[in-house]
Image (cartoon, rainbow over all chains, first blue to last red):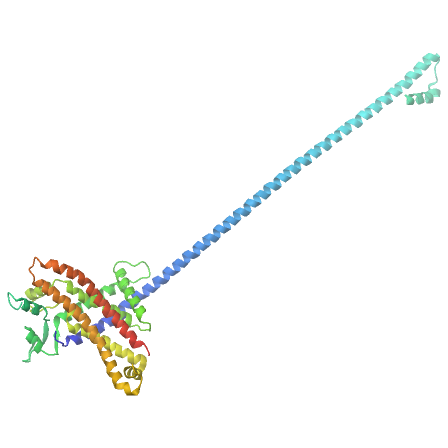
Length: 156
Length: 275
């Protein structure tokens, strides 16, 4: 273990190795490491953001779904209401129509009755005239007595 | 081997001797054949095995990590990049924990220290006779020590580099005056105590590289020595001790690399702090 010039040789080679390491080994590796660190951090952040977005989207979808369900329920309710209304209206219409028809029939019947009565009356008056003629044995001047007969017929 | 049937002490000494290249006292250049020759070469000699293995492992480290760095991408990492990223993140978090200033050098420095020292320490787990035997039988090299961190030169070389960085940043952050103030006006802020403070702080400052180097060296040297001692046992009994020691040593080599790195970060962070 003599101290000799190996000492200097070692120091020189040591210096050269350190220089080489500093120049060609350390920078590329440490740069790559930093870059990767950044990349991973970015990736993690993106993943976080994506999961937040997903949550938001899910919430939105749920909201939309709920709203559309509500809308559908509303529409159905309205439709039901409208249907009931239509039925009610139809019922009323039908009732009104029936009433009208009945009224029309009634008035027609009444008219018929009146007409029949008129006809009968006319016949009755002529029958009365004929009857009177027969009873009186003479002809009755229809013209002269028509007023009387008519009054009679009206009284019937 | 020094002799065909070495004694235990010869064997140990042989394994603790580096392959030294330098100038012999007689003026000729060459590889030392004995430890005495190596010692005689003085300061201007070089340990070929330490240099070769440490540079080889340093290049292995840089090649491996450069391959990962080339593939660096912010997309899904694969293969070698996973490993490189793991190491880089580990070092980066360690640096961020204890160093709060802004400095582009600290993190790559820490990474280099950790991986390089770990790889050099890892050589300790290769059976002690394996590589020296190959070196001896194939290349005819007398000595071959493959764990660079068991050579005080390697650890001191690194810790002195760190020491210069400490001084450099101390001066560049606090200014020369600030650095001197830090050395002289602490812990007792009175003019009378300046010499005392200076001695105290100087010891503290110099203890940093020395402790850094000796801690790593001591741990690995001791570990290596125990492997060598185990290797003296009869061949059929070695596994009973070498396996547990090797498993325990996995912890030691990682821990020592980590300690060297952490202390470097802490020392440099202290150098950046203004009192």
